[in-house]
Image (tube, rainbow, N blue to C red):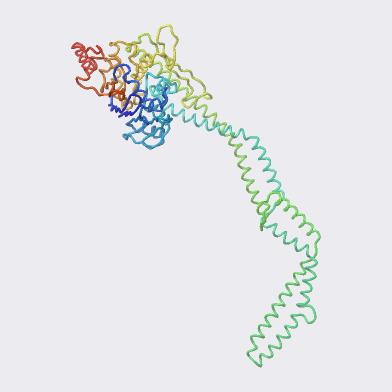
Length: 577
């Protein structure tokens, strides 16, 4: 509910605070006193645009105008919705403060709970919390989408609608994925062909880990075979085969030292070292001999190594990074692993596409079934709603008015998140006229009364907590005014725990004002003298005698009589009866 509205320096308003109550709040006052100005300030607070510029609305002599509204969010659902809309964390029972400033420079600003916000955020919050009737800018029920929400709530089809929405969102995601896969089908095919060719080329060569290093070493040996044979042969001869070879001379030295060690024990270790060295050189010469035996020239092997290296070098050049590395063939093998993963992914996407098509068919079938149930529930609710609304309209002085809900079922392919039905509430205000959508009704008074009829019936289904009625008493008399006043009171005091409606009503009829739980009188007065004279709009809460005087003046004009006072008292007594 709206707990407080504070306005400063806005046109004729200098400093005005409206402390509202639960139930019905009525605003009365002479024409031009500023009732529309207060309503306009409320609309500005909710992010709506004014026909006048911001600079024109700032009170002369002031730098800025300020409008603040304090709302109370009574339940968790409204708090959660408001939290999402303003991107803040709000808890049930905590105040929600919306402030809008209009500067003399023409600039405006919005804040929510002291945090900078946008007019769009304020407007979204306003649409969730407040429903203004009488001006077409902010009428919740004039929008077909909102009419559908109300109808579904009245039909007790909210859960069914939610199920449809979830399935619709799933279908949308599946179709999006399908479209992406379809769009990339040609590219995917080209990529798959390329990857399979590259993988086949590598697989055909059958490279193995470490192979390139081994072949490269073998190629080096074969390329230098003559030099290796010649020089290794010389080394072997010098070590072992030639007369006076190193091993032969060391053996002689070892024998001499061993004999001398018999004469001097200190030579024994030295003799042993020479003997061991001799044995080591003999072993080395034997290994060198075996090495020379393996160096036989094999032209076929040399050609095979050359051919294999050419094959591997082509792969390295084509699929390696080109950077120096100890194992360039390892890069090729790693690339082959990546190719395998990419091939598997592309093939899986083709499988996914086939699976998605099956899923889409299944979800569409589910949507058709849910849509049938949802359409049937809406049609049944519309049928029940029609006579109830027409009865309300008759009581509200529109006996000739007819009401119906147009429901045009569609198919799943053209469905939206709320279903496949195009729903709109239609009214025929006079015999012989065409049924018209609510948004096309020209008369503000008729619109407000139709809204009141709908609100009275749909109180439990309507989630908007603050209702504002302007022009609801246009072109009606006192008798009908009493009917409207009672309905406004009933709407404001609806026992449903889900509605919690608070009603604000601007009226010229005492028969309506008498039903208010809180009665505000708006006046326009001139203050000061000479050049300091200025006009100001003020507001007062009326109780007791002051309220009787206001109601009497509304009935009799400025010449209040004993009779008009008595009639005012009778109105108040009848309102509470």
